Length: 98
Image 1 (cartoon, rainbow, N blue to C red):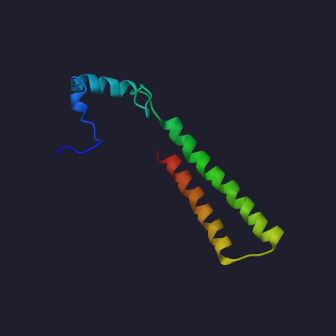
Image 2: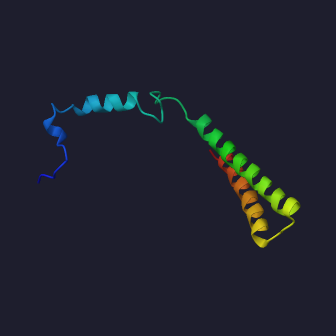
Image 3: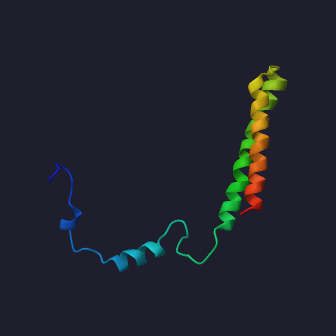
């Protein structure tokens, strides 16, 4: 079935053998950057530490602004602080169990 504007790439040249495709994929893999035998634990640990740290700074600034500068305290402020505490605890357990 032909669709207008769709290019059939099989007509552009010879097919690449699967073993060459696999060799090219393992050398240029973005996740391992060509080093399939190396661990990615450092990248994961960085994400485990950095993400909650950014969230903690954001929640702290929001809480400070709402409670001390504006002087308004609502239930959702305490829920956000509680959720941040659980997020930190979860990140700790993710770091321990990796």
